[in-house]
Length: 114
Ligand SMILES: [Zn+2]
Ligand SMILES: [Zn+2]
Image: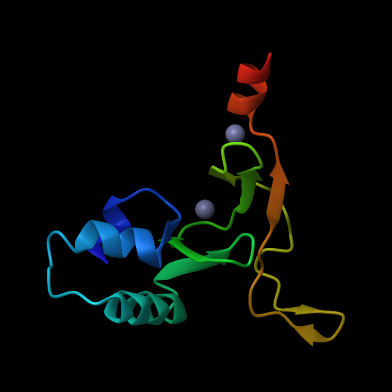
């Protein structure tokens, strides 16, 4: 938990494990995985999937969209005014999670291309 709070956003199970294993040599990846899944279930942290390959975790905070750059692969938090956040029902479907992902070329990569 402390790790999530102290670290950059959007950490994968693997990256968290790799960083923690130095401090806690007895740590197993399963423990990391289960702990993160539990925190996410309790909504203490957010779980996000950007490209369906990997679950990333970040501190729970105000809802935001994610922009992933196709070039540097960075994931950037985007403040998006959307009344989709917080929605609990849409066309009689029950909404449990809202994920808004955008993809393109970030401003840093656009700058360096010129
Ligand atoms: Zn980029
Ligand atoms: Zn984020």
